[in-house]
Image 1 (cartoon, rainbow, N blue to C red):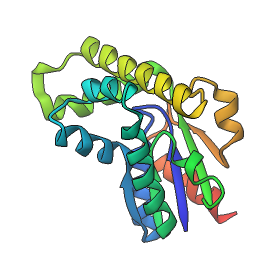
Image 2: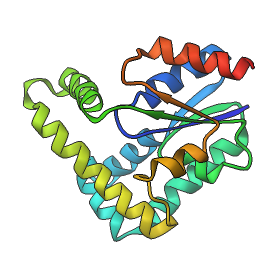
Image 3: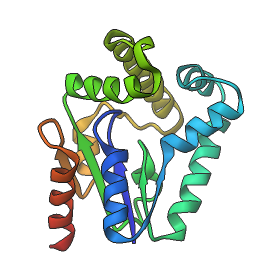
Length: 182
């Protein structure tokens, strides 16, 4: 079985993907973690590496190659912005998570505050997140002609769309399990 999760940062895609993978006895792989490792390998932070990737499409191609290879092995839950796109013909389920911006920013702030402590501010997280997403949207438009700001397009290309704004991870998981069970 192959299940993909997409959604902007802070929608809960990694958290819910991990829960679903555990629930179904599948492995979980996060595109974000692969991208972070690639940034670390080059000694860059995420915003810097995202900016660097704009002028170096080979970074995206390498990331995509790794993700596709993992997806084609099967028995995996993948989360990432474009997993659904590369694996649309073989994925059993393509799930899109949405969420309002303030909730996303607050979730990211809480997560980052745990790791980085008082060095992180809500305004800093907002700026970093929106900056990173803007860079990603630009890259995906240029490389793949995909507009991640086009919600109608994204929803049409997913089997299940869940707004996580007022749901916790377990509630989202329950909705997915119900849908998959049907």
